[in-house]
Image (cartoon, rainbow, N blue to C red; front, top):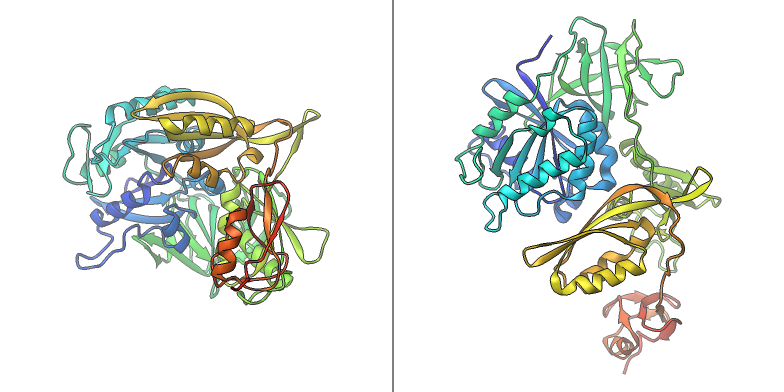
Length: 542
């Protein structure tokens, strides 16, 4: 059975190439909102952190209609640290829109996700976005995409992918790089023509692969997946199987069944082949499991999630000011919150360390863990965290470490300073070429050499540099990298920082704090340019 009334697509793009804005416009033109409805910008980024950082962290599902065809759209995260999400989401779709900025061109993240899509044999539509930019390079960017496809061993059919030129902000698209178009009709028509319709056996035994998990306090775990075979019904008895763990499947019952319409989940009685559904009622369900009929418990193969590369220790806050800011401070509360996060985030690992009040948390990079820490802080958790550590592996008897591919765009005047810092951090220059009055540098660098460089990089490039990284592979240990060459400024007494004390202390180094901040004796309040620590009195009055 072929579902000609349905298309399942994912949108692949680098951070900030306009993916979520494009989806907003597709929803508007596909009739997801009433004519008089007030709509936020970037409706898909509904998490505060996503809006602030301008990135998508969690993959979302939505849909729109065009000429009687329902188009299910999955918005994937564009950041390498959330690639655990990307790998799963691609299993739910039949084709992808590869979204590329008309000025920036292909970036390392585009490469990472595109490679995953090519491996799965998906049909690709290249969408060059932001064509309304005054500095757009439409023709060159199409060539860059072709070079990337060649580089990733795409098939001839994939190399022949159609190209659509869009402006998500203005809501227009066309097949001609030099013409703007008036609406998204060319884009919608190309999706229906080029992306294959889902196929499957509607009369066969049920199979649904769980691709993502949501959590709701009222109904518990909500599983999201695509119906691969058969029909799923509300209140149906099913079996839950796991491809990587062949222990006896267990019975469960589908309590609620929903499909996605626009931005809402709509209850349905049943769903058939190709439909993307959300269902609840199975308490222990996890990503990668297969929901099947009771009579035929047959598990579907599942993409193994890439292993974590970075680890941090989360522990109870033991500072003298513990309990002043957060309401959740005990190890039990922190543990429960971390375990709850692992239900939703498959790339995260949490294990007990030797101590009762600390936990080892490993993830896919600095950003992955920093977003977890910031989310917990906003929820009222108080905890202390260690510096990040990379996770080493032994391959063929040799110690190996995670290595990242780093792409840096900087003004010509900053190239020297950046190359010097990269050299100190064991970075290997792979490619270097000018783009207008800027220079693009491509490096292979050990992950640990990259820690803490972002703030330094912004200083070196006077805030004009752009840096993006993606996990590349494990390579033999690069040798020691010098860590800190500076000491700390340490508070001399407990109290509140005063402007007079700070004014005198700033001669000794760079301060982290301003006036009116509560400090305790021994607290680090700044960085000293010398190698040894310096004690300063920031509470000193005249």
